[in-house]
Image 1: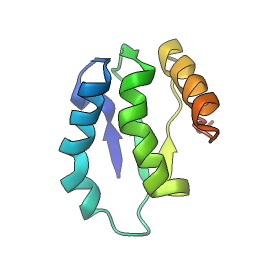
Image 2 (image 1 turned 135 degrees about the vertical axis):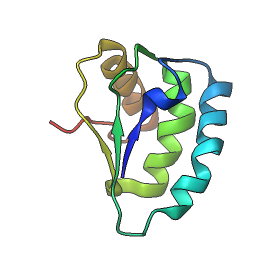
Image 3 (image 1 turned 60 degrees about the vertical axis):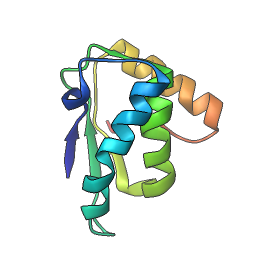
Image 4 (image 1 turned 90 degrees about the vertical axis):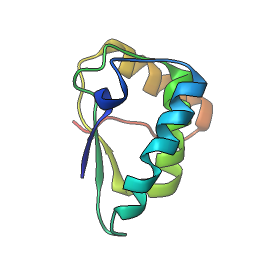
Length: 97
C-alpha cells in the first residue's frame, strides 16, 4: 500500500497534528495484511517537522519495521527531519534509493 502523506496536508508540523494523523490512520493500518508493505510517499509535502514525523513515522517504524518503506524525496525538510529522528531514536529512517 502507498500512503501519500500530503493527504494530511502540505505543511506537516506539530506533535499534536502528527499524533492526530496517526490516530486517523489507525483503521487503515489495521486493514494491512501482516505481509503487506507500507510505502510512504512525500510528494506534495512542502514542510515536514521532526515533531510531526516523530508522532507519525516513529510509531509506524516501531510497528512495521522492515515493512515500512520511505520513498525517495528531493525535499530538504524531509531529509533533515529523517536525519534528526535517526539520531534521536537510534534507528534507521533512511529513504529508499
